[in-house]
Length: 461
Ligand code: FAD
Image (tube, rainbow, N blue to C red):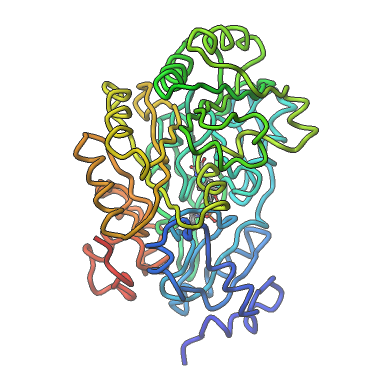
């Protein structure tokens, strides 16, 4: 008789198992509920049991047992992903790596840690060395380094260094294979990136080595503007100004600022806002530019004030903007879009005019993987039907804007089907039985339809 997931605690009694139905249910979910479509499609999907290993030896024991018994394994960091990335489609074990979180070292401009480390903890460890992470998702307080690599994109800092996927940002990973005798393999450079944004389907990442950047005492400011165009042009000009040092430029068109209820006194009604992290020596230049565009700085906190208040504007940017909006109005959802760097402002203005009232413009300024200055959108949508949501995304595509659909849970569907075939080759090497997060990497099943658990739960167009 084959071992089942529920029998594993008897085999490995020294590990920290979680079998309680409610807790396993919670550990089976992430923030996919931002999408009414994913909420429906992933309802009821859950693991059978969860385990929280704290050492490499403990991880190895779980992996060896699952590989020997053919039990699916879904890796989880902190579960802040947005697309059900750590929700098991076919049961099995949830491998919660949040306890595998030791900081390794900083050497010059490079740092290394175990994958379960929280990004805020990594940053705190790097600061005494005069360094900080190159990108902080707005979930940095809870999100793990492994989770950002497995399911994330970038964040504050991407305006200087691009997304994680930009060459030179992630230098190496140390990963474990899923086999009865698990192997540990170090991958460097482009090979390491084949495990990036694959939702933990093609390797268990144990450690990451990342490039850092000199730490800065960032000042946090909000600038507000009466005119949409003035706010947009300021955000774009300041964001691209090469001499003005910044970490974050987030543009939120009215009425989005109204959802930031705890910042209400700094956000005049009907105004558009730009949330900024600026270096102290660049603040005067930033203020001159705000004035040139007819805006005013309504909020300012030094790095010390941010630290002592435990309140950072970062937690209003990126997908925290959507979170604040959803807290006020449950009838909202969002889309993710990448503009064309050559025509970005023209595209933003045209789409604002075409969909005003139904789509609220939220832009994050950044550099692309190739280095071009650009903006990407996390527009907030007044949700009516799935059909209308798809129409809105099509209107964006018709304007030449790329949509990274956040209402799908298959790796390829979120990437417009642009998956490097080498990703599947990597899965063959690290997960020959197809046990890691089964159902999420469609190309694997196309490569070998006889693989167990081949059918994704539901095909979303
Ligand atoms: P999890 O959600 O636990 O996991 C994410 C994926 O990675 C899963 O598929 C999991 O299987 C896989 N994984 C986790 N650890 C490993 C490992 N060790 N080895 C292999 N695979 C692994 N994302 C951004 O990029 N930028 C943002 O600014 C941002 N803002 C957000 C704001 C909000 C409010 C929310 C809800 C989400 C946001 N996200 C953002 C998405 C998410 O928070 C980040 O991607 C985050 O870094 C995920 O980390 P996590 O530890 O929670 O990962």
